[in-house]
Length: 397
Ligand SMILES: *Cc1c(COP(=O)(O)O)cnc(C)c1O
Image 1 (cartoon, rainbow, N blue to C red):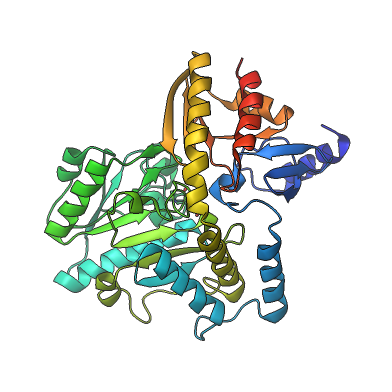
Image 2: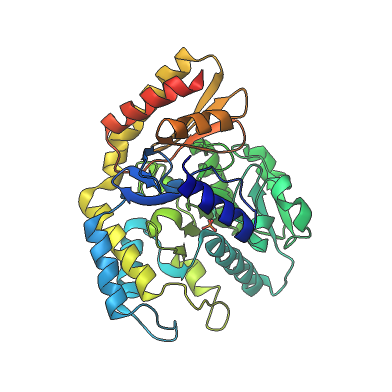
């Protein structure tokens, strides 16, 4: 590392709260699927800001849209209508088949809204409170108190208890363990359609279908968190579309704005008509014209350029190449995931491999200590996969 980055990193460690063990690079600019650090070194990016920058860096059409919106109107209150929010909501409805959209600033806030909608739905039904939500072990839903309370990782929650309460944890892909959590107070079941942070595990079709049927039978709401696995990452606009198991409430964020902070929770008409009403929920920034201009343009490009279709071609290629890598290296125990959301499970912590990759111009990230996670920009080509695998291959030994 040169002096320039060293100086900035020193300053950062004095000024920023130490909530991350950061990799020792200062990123400065992006171009396509490449990032550059402050000293001009080029990196192939297989992280995309953790499943955010789906379109790659410097997409001119997207950038021009943002610049135009900045000059026109950055923000206005949700007490007034604005065209980008209306257009973005219409596009979300079309791509997801959900009926009602609420824009947030982040993924965690989308989860908070989903929880509030589910509780209100149950409250309106029986006039009581203290309803329960079933969440999954190894899930990740965000860092705010409500989202943290449904996150199935005790380590993340421990110091911050009590959470919002009345949450039960079942095992992912184990329907009997879900059944065992159901009481007459259960109002919702929340899960990621593909677990990201928890280890790149997709829900099985059988599990999703059984949970959907259970929710229908008991009038409980199915909340699917598509914050990481949605927006084309699995080769479908939203991961549940592969199995046709439609949620009552869905959350989105990360690639929804491709870099502009924005999330959303969406619901079907049944929940829309019987949950949150005026005065129940709000946000100052959520869904402001800048954020929604980004969402609108991202969704326009997704649809026009068939980004999900591209993932259906490149995803299996990445799968094949990572399988070959696993066959070569006995320290790789398992290969998980789907589409452009894959993971390699190692015997030991992967931090040394990630640091080695950085030295060699490749940006990778973990999911848990022992799993290498691959969530690249969705616009990567097969040649980028080859380039990544060639570098990683050298870094494993
Ligand atoms: C990242 C993530 C969140 C939290 O989103 P933030 O924007 O960081 O609040 C929630 N759920 C899943 C599945 C995620 O991957």
